[in-house]
Length: 343
Image (cartoon, rainbow, N blue to C red; front, side, top):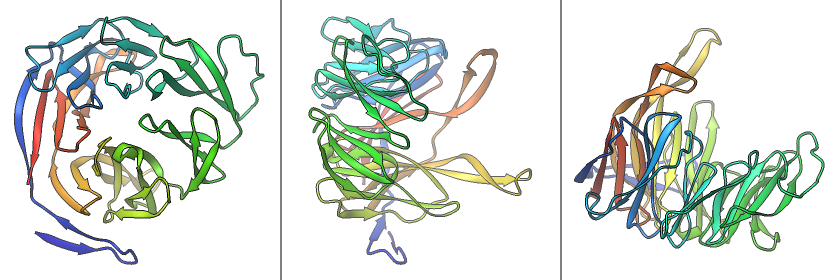
């Protein structure tokens, strides 16, 4: 067990050599696994799979027994966007298509409406450069819009976002939007549009702990960064990781855990500096206990290059962390695997 302290930060963490114990493997029936996402109740896993970026379909697996209760939906998300579940775990938004599990019915938002995510059980929101439907607001340079939809993909109004404002993150559990405004993260009630308060700005913001915390990247120096987590209601800091060269992150929706994706760097002889290298490892970090719980080096899969069907490129396996922070699902090269995090 290795202990460490961050200079200038009141944070002490512990690195634990935990393990990932495999629970099951599932053959996806297609060579590429493009995206994975646990349902909020942790009972299902949605997977976007297919032989090519423009020939994909959606699998919904029973997390307890994927072979017995697999649902397959012939919708084509075209490699766009991630997976957004409704709070009840009964609807999925993938790309621009909403899928209802109860009856398999789908609907799609209008072209140009962005990639919506659930901000409540029957409400979706997306950022786009223009309004849709009967709205006639004139497009202004540098401006964008938050567009709302009901669960049948019908337009339900829009908000104007002035220059330098953007949607950072969404809490479907609490119906909150996190909007970058005047270099600050502004917390907005999605129903009323009322600004509740502001938080310190973080990069690559993700919501965690049932909407009670947000985590994001803080750049200290070029190629030196860490992740900080804040209390949504007070703005108080909860924990900060040690420093890394470059990070991506994904959070457990109902727990105080997240996955850090640590990338390396390579020399850039054209710019005489550094460029982003390959993915080195993924780390599960618990910001409640300030501990690194487990880490692993992900495999890579070959996937077709968009618009170049004869070419392929290497990319890391897709993954997600369960809402309770206790499981990891990972998929690539035609196989989806579930692992339990053990100390």
